Length: 306
Image 1: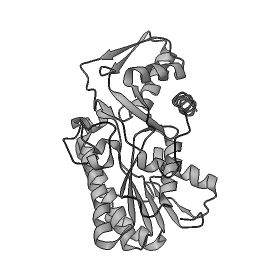
Image 2: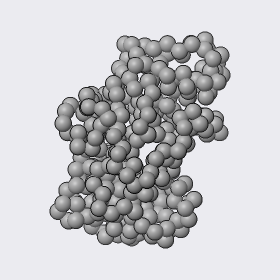
Image 3: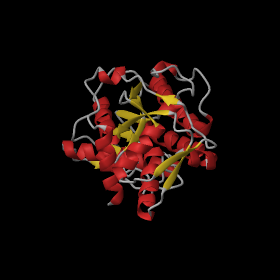
């Protein structure tokens, strides 16, 4: 891929897609193909086929997805599995059909079994049961990954699947009902600060460990992978560092400036106890994360306020 190629970023307004676009523009890309959901509904088969026939993108970053945290996954399971299956099927099939040179599919660390050995290697996929609180999203993502593998095996379609760890950063979703842990806590603690609340309750015990990666670090890795040939069709991308939900909540409180107490509601689900990815393969290509968590959280909070 060169910076003059016709590059389609599906989901360019989302957390990952917007980071990819920022990095491509910074690097000097001049031929980006972007569509909002209103301009192109990726769950609409006919619309997606017409788009690919007309635009003929050479490279595709498939970062479009229906995403959310534990509450959203539990509340809207049908939408999470249906919408993601439709998006992936339409985009991957039409990218192959209309001559795309390479497609990069964004998966998620939640595709791995709930009780995986740590750190999680790519080959641990489908070796055990999934985490029940997000299985609908995980099953859809596994299907997208397998779709890429099938088109690669049968048609020699160049598709690579990146499995990022838990992400945060500018462009995140701060909706109180659908947000992941970092943006959800940023919003709640910000509102608690404004209300001068003495206490904020956090879901779960606070004991689960999470590996966090700033989305701009991920974007650098994804663009690197687009230029790598002969790489395995699944590759993990992670920071290699873990933090408990309890310590993360306190770190976000510090970034926000909330000085009240944090309590943990053990009657609420914890989710997966631990998800640390083995990122050896991506590290062999010279990539490593650059943005420290404290710096990234502070910048994300400033973006949220703006």
